[in-house]
Length: 176
Image (cartoon, rainbow, N blue to C red; front, top):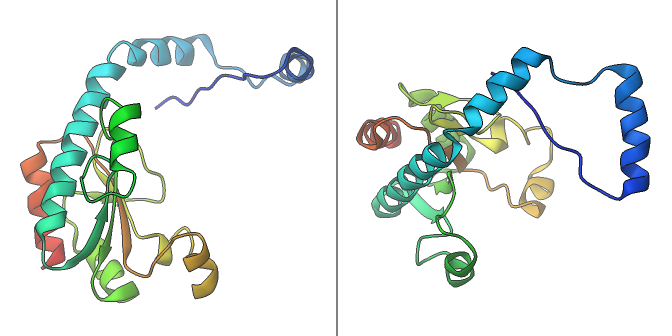
């Protein structure tokens, strides 16, 4: 795995950052730069698959009785659906949904997954799920979580490249 980025901004800010970078060495090795450039060759194809799988997962979740609601911009039920359709060719690879039953139901869902990995970091070739209320946002109070949109049973799924039927089977089994 390689992590890379770009620095974009005003010329005067870039000049300061360039000086820092040149003298402290936070640059990629030639091998990592090559790996990153090779991965960019297939990025468009991978993103299409992520988005295609995410839409199918979102539609599946919307019909599941254990799910309170689903947030995915290409579902017609999403409040900004029309805007998303104007601005985007596809709906992205992330799906959020609320499991009925609160924080315990969210934890139970995550623990019941067999194929899908659970992690606090979303974005991989594999499908990943996270339950923010019991992981990334667990140190916040209930009120603080709600203020940033983290409900007790909220699950976030980053759709991977696996066969979507396998992913939905794992989700269905974990939802009970």
